[in-house]
Length: 182
View (cartoon, helix red, strand yellow):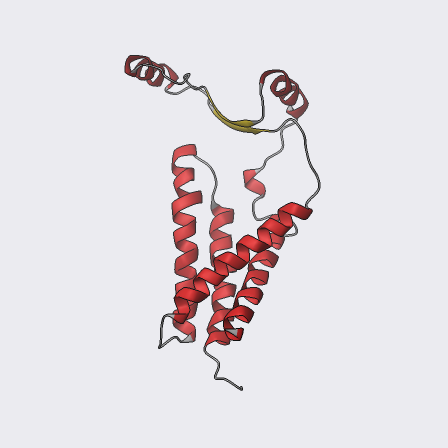
């Protein structure tokens, strides 16, 4: 149990540290959050017209008929569209967000450790490849699928997949396959 706990705590810390570097110092996700010189004008319009939430524009109101949906699709083809996540108030306090992030990272690594420990012949290579496989599943089913529908950039998430899950897999491959007392 001690081995699993240490594997989880250190693995979660590795995930958290990579995520911190990825989103801050290395700016791996910079292409996802671009600057526009028109931001003040756009924000003034959003403030007047939106409540907190996520929006896809243009969009039909709920309950639209099949005929209205078909007409909307035909009329929207080739025209501009946008996705917006809007919040009325910016909160620069990161304490709770960081706590939630490290807790999620620990849970994710705990689940990976649990799966790896089911393998009675676990070796470094299996740990590393299994960790990368878990990262690939997460990448393919969330950021990549979203990029198909919303035409977004996922290169940053792909870099994260290889780096964070590769580092965690290497750590777990070394730690979990050590002999007791070594």
